[in-house]
Image (tube, rainbow, N blue to C red; front, side, top):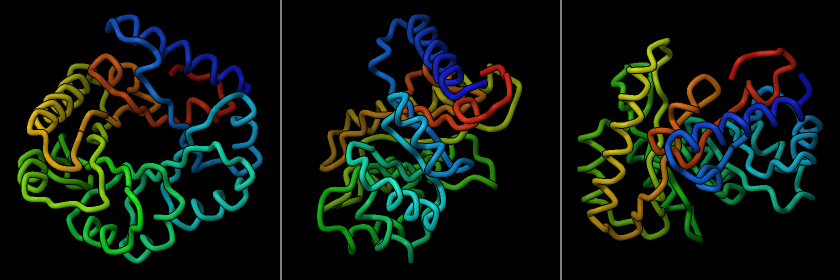
Length: 229
């Protein structure tokens, strides 16, 4: 399938999920995950109207931001685990960090930042050892004690387990939504926590029905295969 066909299919799926959950499609931001394509293919998506792009490797991210520097209306999302030593290089170029997954990373961002940094706190809802992030209990405790100067916790992010169980996916996304609402209600300084980054190619429809405001979609947008999304 062409990228135009892929984008149309994904957009239709977003609209359907929004309709099923009585939400407006404008409530959901599509972040195109571009780790498997180069700057030329990213430009194809840009020409189709995509403006939010997500990368998960620092060196590739920096390379692509340089290659596409002339497209100054791109909103750059860093979605992978960020090494502390890479913060000083990545920080000036990102609009959103989706993977604030540990206190040491927050400390380094606070040290290096010169302007507000929009971050999603990464929460390991499923409890899988292979996934990064705070537990629900750790997230609450950490944010209640935090005193951020530059970091703005705009919301929470999670990665769902790889599963064929829609029930399990609904449960994970619902738990993150509940935690987001709980944190938002605390009205903590620099922690509005109104957004939810959750849902990828295989599960973004379910994520939207559970309240996702940012979805991170790669394969369904960039693959040449005729696949279900």
